[in-house]
Image 1 (spheres, rainbow, N blue to C red):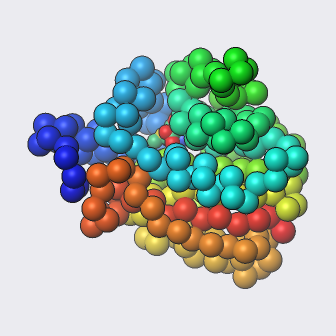
Image 2 (cartoon, helix red, strand yellow):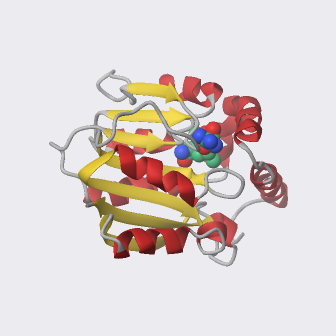
Length: 226
Ligand SMILES: C[S@@+](CC[C@H](N)C(=O)[O-])C[C@H]1O[C@@H](n2cnc3c(N)ncnc32)[C@H](O)[C@@H]1O
């Protein structure tokens, strides 16, 4: 990675990303994030994590303030929610498999004293979540579609709970966007008329990334639900 990181900080980032990408099942994810939750935000800050801000900015451009609630899938400690709240987007609901990560998100508040998230629910996104179809006019996700975490099959569940006309902004780690079939899945949804206006943008996930390492980049798919 380019930039001003010390060799020690760079080694720590690499070690954490290697551990995070070594998981392969929902249980692995529960265990990983149970251990990581208390220090996760500090880790993101010291390594200048910017993916959540990109997702929030891209979403805000496509969002009508009168539209209703946004679902943040794999919300973790709430980095996307925090960015959305700063931009005046509300209400925001979060789902995540890790109760420990959600406990961190629960402590976040907006400048007006309201909580950043209206509701936070423990749910495994590889299955059917307890949300009615066509519920959300906005769906976002950042950091959860990556190596060993969520695969492209989970997109169907997010599309199920999204309302027709909903704005969707889903970040996928660049290292798996093509190899794990995300690009094909988004393009098939577009060709089949399930989603419209598909746009895929690549952004840095970490401010110091120089663009040469796909694991430090994100492909961000933006679309509206047909
Ligand atoms: C790298 S973190 C990203 C968190 C947050 N969105 C961010 O940008 O910082 C990945 C998140 O995905 C969640 N996750 C992993 N597998 C999951 C699953 N099967 N269902 C729901 N959430 C899952 C983890 O618990 C974790 O909070």
